Image 1: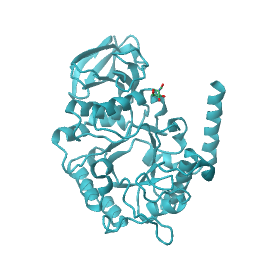
Image 2 (image 1 turned 30 degrees about the vertical axis):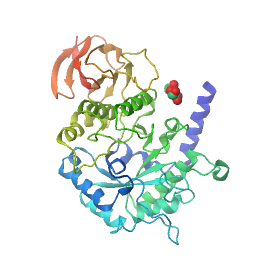
Image 3 (image 1 turned 180 degrees about the vertical axis):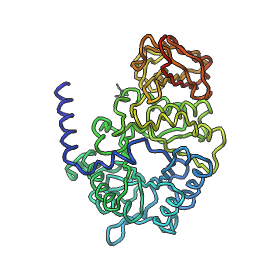
Image 4 (image 1 turned 135 degrees about the vertical axis):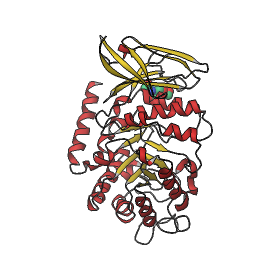
Length: 411
Ligand SMILES: *[C@@H]1O[C@H](CO)[C@@H](O)[C@H](O)[C@H]1NC(C)=O
């Protein structure tokens, strides 16, 4: 076990050294979790220049842009089925009839950034041209020619390994290197977001490759998707920091299938685990209750903490023995450090209203013998001080409570 982890560590260091000069991928633009919109859940393969741009306008008009949501990302299905005679990927001539560059110019004109999808295999997940073996040409097309600032990179339809002589890590590194080259040529920072949730555990090796790595396959929107994602995240929170993070996948806030309490839990957990916050909802139609969840500035501020990049971690499972691995029963009590204090999250994964209470010193970031002021991150109000228990009364079924504790002197 020990020799395995030393071998893994050395492999990581070697890879890191061999790519000096491409670290722009993990600084600047990529240092904090990406925030914005993604087309996949609302539009799937119906994505087009009008629905993308109307969501860009909505990010601005709803006030989301002012809170930091800045990427407008086009997912799979934007391309033509065949490359042109030069081997370039082309945009669909009907759905993107004005051309990709026109669209990214318009998005940039709103003060936003533009993102696109590509794939490390021979075909994308939906059967469009993949970038395997064409990484340099495709990175140039996406970044230099079309003007994108963000690439979501999946690993659907990988070539057989005896053809590829590489593995998913090698394929991702090839695109990372190609993006580094193209982004340097046009002098911009590009975010590379990796999608691999299978057996290859990217959280163990991808910090020098991408801004984030997906930890689970998209599902839902339903409560089971929220709990299974949190169960997965609970065991790998240590993988997240400024140089890369667990991507819990798109926010399904405002999509039917989740109650308002469930949407609040969803947003709180994604924000505090430092996941990217990419909204998978038609923002031209979102209702005000859901919009207000996405606009919780106190939670966004922790997600975008520029001094502490770590995720919250589980303290107690609550209704199960600690470290139970059960996709229906993720931990209920979590805590972690922020630049402004220590954050606590209670999630009621049960079907009845529940009262929570935890000894604050169970959190490694709390000091014994001190008292703390308590800020309620959903009520947006101060809730006294404590040096012992932190309680949340009557947390609704599938609901959440979150608090920020600040040192307030000797107990
Ligand atoms: C949790 O259980 C799933 C499915 O049984 C398994 O694939 C996964 O590796 C387990 N996780 C941990 C941390 O044991």
